[in-house]
Structures are given as C-alpha cells and as structure tokens.
Image: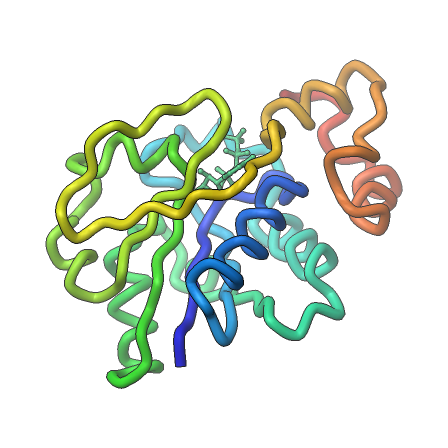
Length: 193
Ligand code: ATP
C-alpha cells in the first residue's frame, strides 16, 4: 500500500490543501492519504494558531467527509506537545511497516527549510519526502532523496481566509460549503487573524 501523509495546522483547512491531497493521490498513485492536524507547530508560535486542536480536527473531518481516499488522523493531537514529523512517522511506520510505503507531502513553503527539521535524516529514511509547488514559493534545490510533485496549486492560505472572515468577506471560493457553514455557525476567526 502507498500511503500519503499530509500534516498541517489546518487553521482552517481549505481548497488548496484538498487540491494538494487530490494531486498527491493521483501523482503518487496513493491508495490512501492521511490528513493529520498538528497539535503544536514546530516553527509557529502557539499564539499564531487560532482554533483549538479539536476544532481544527473537526474541520478536517468535515472537509473530507465522503471521500474514501482521505482519512483523518488525530495522532498528533492525542500525542500532545510539539508535533514533530519524525515522531509521527515513527508511529506510522509501526502501524504500516514494510512493504507499505509512506509518502510525506509538504507544500513548497516548508520544503525550503528542510535542514531545520528535527532529525531530517531519520525522516528521509522513514518516508519518501515529497515537496509540492505552492504559489509564492520557489524551491530551487532539494536533497537527493526528496522528490517534487508538480501540480496546479490554488492561491489560497489559511492566513488569508482568517483575514477575509475578520473583514466580513466571503470565503465560499476557498473552503467547501459545509466548512463555510461550520465556521459561520461557530463564529470562528471573527476577532483574530
Ligand atoms: P497559514 O496561512 O496559517 O500558515 P497554510 O495555508 O500554509 O496556513 P498549513 O496548514 O500550514 O496551511 O499547511 C499544511 C500543508 O499544506 C503545508 O505543507 C503547506 O505547504 C501546504 N499548503 C497549504 N496551502 C497550500 C496551497 N495553496 N497549495 C499547496 N500547498 C499548500
């Protein structure tokens, strides 16, 4: 089995993430992809993450509901603390030992800073590391073991969505309808960006 792993803060999840998941399924010939909301981001301050882990998890579940290829994992939230990729991949490798192959997928923004990841060499031995293109980010050089996924990314980010909500602008182009509804009903992101 070829299993994709897509981590993120998903604050909130948006169509850019979903397009990346779809492109990964197709381009990497995955049998399934796991979306894993982080508990705490290794490179972001905790006050940069607005919604609670449980709310972000719920939003990811809503966004992929009914898609048999996309699964949602709460393992980083359950583990607590800072969500280091190496710890997640160690856990997943126990659950999916060889001959399963793990593909860890990230957008170009984080691919630029691979050397600062905790135990990057161990990460590269646990999973095939894939960097996808993302508008506004140019990844020129990648280590030998890292591959690229070329796709047509959408120019959307969670930061932009939070700003739009604060300004009272529509986010219907950026998130699936049921997620837009969830954000509205729960009054998320109205006061923060
Ligand atoms: P924020 O704006 O809050 O920093 P974000 O939109 O970058 O959030 P994350 O949850 O941090 O979203 O992203 C999770 C993963 O998805 C990362 O690997 C990121 O590079 C990738 N990603 C996010 N948005 C896009 C996009 N529009 N196209 C391609 N990849 C994306």
